[in-house]
Length: 356
Image 1 (cartoon, rainbow, N blue to C red):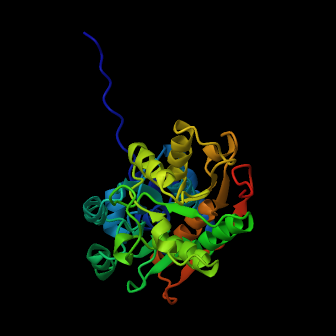
Image 2: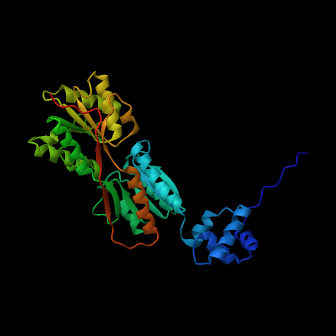
């Protein structure tokens, strides 16, 4: 008969305490990361735990310390390189501090975001970093704060929600990109965004843009165009580029108009890629016929022909700062809430030409 070995018994705190010749309470303090012990005792316990291959019981630690050692991160689209890079910055800081990260993807859907908040709170996460899908609908975020879960907003702000936020300087970035196109002689500039809307629908109200980052970019674009003598700049902000098919339709409609744009500013890297593909499909030459600038320095922008000029956002740094703010709150920081707005820069490549 085959001899089946019994499963190895889990190493307990008591085992570690015995090996380190300390009390169980002392070993628990060291392994749980709470209370105070001497460096000599801490080193003994850690060495014993490593020798025995001790693995902490996270549920038990959560019940005894009130902390799970885990933070929750909810982003709009994890397939978007912008959010992937941000999560890397968050995770690097969290890991160094001894925290695990649970990532949830809302798909920019409010209901999915609400469900993720409920799930993560149920998992007893120590704090949350959230990219809100709708800055006008945030009762679920207020509830998280109300029950004592530290919260940091990422990439977008909700001014009436008194929590920390880390974003890019979106309004200034859009103004700088638009002015660059203006300096190249462009007046007929279109701003294309993925926010839902009928194909080619133009911007008329802030309610059409429920995320603060997109709204601020649109406002920056309109302000720069208005200052350049374009009276109806809002009509050149086009919604509905939510996927390649819809972007194709938006670009076709724009180029068929009597005053077709000579330049396009894409609201993010996914939209930028879709716009570039649409122009290729239509046989429109970049930048000879239409100049293009995209937000975010995604990898694809350097391998196209021509490479695409971009608004370079310090995304990794944004993620790092968001994690640091959250860990400070988890650690009990009571400083006033802050909004960190990080400056961007414009990387000039080959997708912008002087307007003839």
